[in-house]
Structures are given as structure tokens and as C-alpha cells.
Image 1 (tube, helix red, strand yellow):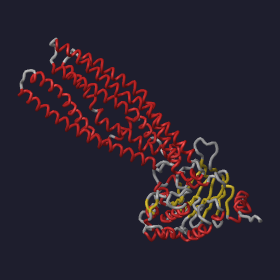
Image 2 (spheres, helix red, strand yellow; image 1 turned 180 degrees about the horizontal axis):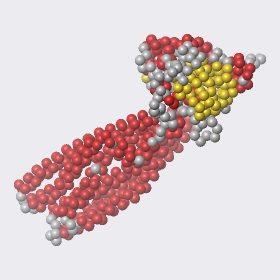
Image 3 (cartoon, helix red, strand yellow; image 1 turned 180 degrees about the vertical axis):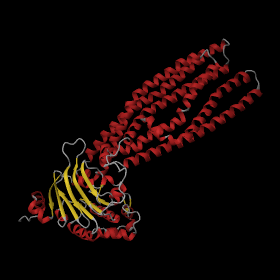
Image 4 (tube, one colour; image 1 turned 135 degrees about the horizontal axis):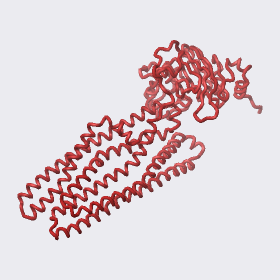
Length: 577
């Protein structure tokens, strides 16, 4: 998965990557040439007292060092740009792909996991790309070049490389193999911490209302402790790497000096050559260490890449039409024909054989007990999920044959949980129509019975709104969400229990103000209160996912026991003192 992700996302960076490889090659070869020049200075210059030779070769060393520095800086600069561009592209790809998910796929992964995959997971793979450009490319060049140059200096000490390099590689490999499960578990633990924290922040009012702060504190402490314990176990293994590397380096240095001194005494090698061999051995071992360090990053990056590719490989259950209908034959008309919906793996369907028709200028109300499938039914119209049987038709065309943008342009949805975005009142209202004028915003606010409280807010339309609309009350949030849908001026209005936070007087005034505005539109209202839907042109009564009654209020009172029971449960009676 890691190779596949890198291959797909780095295809656009082939030229910079080629430049990085060339720069690292030149820089590494320059680094390998320096010990040989240093050996010549010692053996040919210092030993013979030839100052001119020392100055001349020293000048060459300065030039080679300058080339090495320039190449290294350029390689790191290009590598950083490649890594940052890679991270930007992967995040954008993930974000765009997740935006095409239906509610089913979002629920499958969960919001905390999707956030972690688009932030922490991408960052881990991005860091691998950066370190590969700066370290991994140079490591094999330095290893192979170091071996060649060391053998060139003295074959008699070559056996030390055959011992020290495998010892270092095997020791580090054993440590890293034990770290891989820890890295995999750490990403899952991060998901858990994000999920718990997100739940607590989102539900802070519920937590405080039920005095559950100690319980939530303990729950977060458990998740945090699990992540800490996993990180510590992995960190302890990580902490072993550098002591092992230093041990092998130091032992190898002592061995080179010990056996090399004997060869110098025997006249088999000169002092400068011994010094160069020691430097080459150190460079080889450092290259092995760099490669091993990269191997340490690869397992965690591989785990993250698997999680990223898992999202990218998941296709939305809501598939856009390959040849969408451009001009539907009718306008502002909604029809459901034998609709059935069942979640994957569920025993019973949520909806079964639901049929009704909503025409322009009419109001269709849907009512039923909790869990009857009202919100799911409304979600089928804008294709937040797709039917498993039957058809949903908008303007005479199956929604599966309409382009998503064309479908959503015709629909104004006010969800059950109205959500406002960080910004201002105006920016939230223009979410439905970016080109709406201030006069159109004020008109929508007046219809939604929100003009008065917005006018009293500091700045009016420019008044700040916090994330989720936490700076306004529940009723104000609902009215702003209704105003947002009105600004869009759609053909079909979908109100999913959008009047529940309003008092009866505001509810009645808002519905009265809506009638002339929606005279040419089809209106579908999901409600719990009978008073909200009593004047609807048709009322659909749902029970256990099926339609048990269709008609107006008076007719259903006579013919539908389920509706009569709902009405009776909401009637108030005075209790004698």
C-alpha cells in the first residue's frame, strides 16, 4: 500500500526527484573523496614536510567540501518541497474523496478516524518522503562507495567491515521488527483519543447537566493512558537504537586502530591510509544506521498508508450517473415509488414500500413515533443514502439519474440538527447562495422570524458565529438554518423536525410567513408536533418503516388509529387542584 500510494502521488514530482538523486550522488561522492585527500596530505605532505603539497591538496579539499555543501543544501531544499507538496496533494485527495462519501461510508469509518487519517497519517508518510529524499537516497551510495574506497585503501582490514556491518544491521533489524506492532497499535490508540475527546467537547452540555465530569475524565484518562503505554513501549525500543549504533561504531573504531596499528608497524599500510580506512568504515556504518533509521520509519508510514489507501479505495454507495439528465421535464415535483431501505447486515428494513407524491404549492407532512424512519426517508431525497429498492423521483427523474449538483441545486434541506459554520451570520446564510444580496438575507431572516434577534446582535449580518453555532440558542440556530434554505430559493423544501426548538407562537408565525414564499415549491416537513403539520395538504403516517395512513388531519383522526394516538398523546388536560 505504501509503494502504491507513493507511486501514485509522486508521479507529478519525477523531475525534482531525479534532481534530488543526482544532487545526493554528487554530494555523497564528494564526501567519499575527502578522506582519500586527507590521507594523501598525511602520507605525502605531512610525512615528507612538503608544505606546497599540503596547500595544494588542502585547496582541493575546500573545493570538494564546497561542492558537497551546495549539493546537500539543494537536495534538502528540493526534498522538503517534494514532501510538502506530497502532503498537500494527499490531504486534498483524501478531503475530496471523503466529500463524495454517503452517510453510510462516513458512519463506517467515523469522523475521528477520518480526521486522524487526513492529518496524523498523512504527516507520517510525508515525513518518510522527506527523510527518504535527505537520507535514504544517500545511504546506499555511501555504503557502496565507502566499501569501494575502503578496499582501495587497504584490503587487509576489509574483514572488519564483513563483521561490523552485518552485526549492526542484524541488531537494528531485530529491534525494528518488535516496533512494528507498536506503531500499528499507536494509530488505533490515537483514533480512540480523538473519538473520546470529540465526544466530550461536542456533548459538554450533557456532561455538565448530568454531572458526569468525573466519569468523562476517567474515560479520557483510560484512553490517554493506553496511548501513553503503547508509545512508551515503542519508545523504549526506539531508545535502544542509538546505544546499539554507538556501541558498534566505537568497537569498530577500536578494532580498526588495534589491527591497523599492527599493519602500520609491519609497513603494510601507511598512517594516512589507516586514517582514511577508519573514516570510510564510519561512513559505511553511518549509512547503515541511516538506512536502518529509515526502516524504522517505514513500518509506521506503511500502517498510515494502509489507512489512507483504505479510505481512497472505498467507493461511495451513492454513485453519480454516467450520463445524467440535463433538463428534467417537470419542476418542483417529488415522488417516492415503493421505496425500501435497509442497512447492510440489518435483519429488517428501515423503510418498506413507501410511496407518495408532493406537487408544487403543496405541503406534505411526515409524522410517526421515534425510530419510524422519518429522517432516513428524508435522507433518500438528496441522496445522502440510496434506496435499496424502489425509486425517488425529483421533477420526474430518478435521483440516481440526475447529476448530484443538479439535484442538490433543486433542494433546500434544513437538517434535524442544524449546523452553523465558523464565520458570520451573512457567511452562513450565503452558504445556500453565495451571490445573495444583503436585502435578500434580511428578507429570509424576516420570514424565518430571525430578523429581530439578528438586528440586535453586534454587527447585524456581520455578527460572528462560532463553530456549530454555539454562540446562539437552539431556537435561533434553527431559524438561521431555515433562513439559509430560504436564501437558496429551491424547488423542494425539506424540513427535518426543524421547528421543534420553537415556541408555538413563533412556529405558527413562521409557517404562515412560509406559505407565500413556497407557493411554487413542494414542501416536505418531518415533525413530532401535530400543531406544526395540522394544516398540511397531506400527512404521511409512518410506523415501523411502513405507511399506515395518508390524508389530511381530520381524515386521519377518523381512519388512522396510529395518528389518533399521536394526537391524543399531545393533547393537554387540566388537572383539578
